[in-house]
Amino acid sequence: MKTARERPRILVVDDEVGFTRLLKLNLERAAGYEVWIENKASRAVAAALELQPDLLLLDLVMPELGGLEVVAALRAHEALRDVPVLFLTAVAAAGQAAAGEPVIVKPVSLTELMARIEDRLRARQGA
Image 1 (cartoon, rainbow, N blue to C red):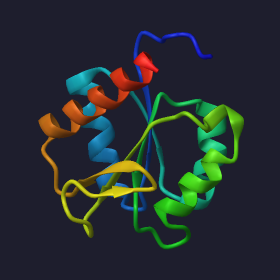
Image 2: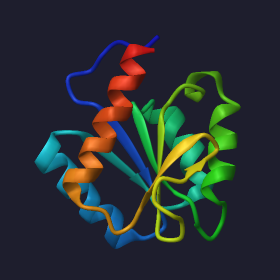
Image 3: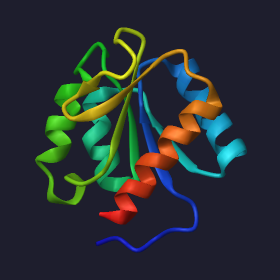
């Protein structure tokens, strides 16, 4: 089991470079998270193994691999099996779940996103 960090680590996997940069900037400034970006879904598992994130923000629809395929690959690794995921997508209905993980529809307000992140982080700590 990982020890608690001062700042939660979040790995953002999304093919939209501008979106990920803005998200990183906002989450680091507003909430103090340590945010890492991966814009190639094919490198998401390697990035997660290196980073050991506390949470993964993952787009559902990307050119190389879809978010569901990335989650399946993550869950194949013991070290990543319990990392919570929040899917971010522009093509799903609010409240939907994918692979048992919650889905947030873009665009989303920073306040709502931070609240959902905090919910997932608290749930993981309680597990």
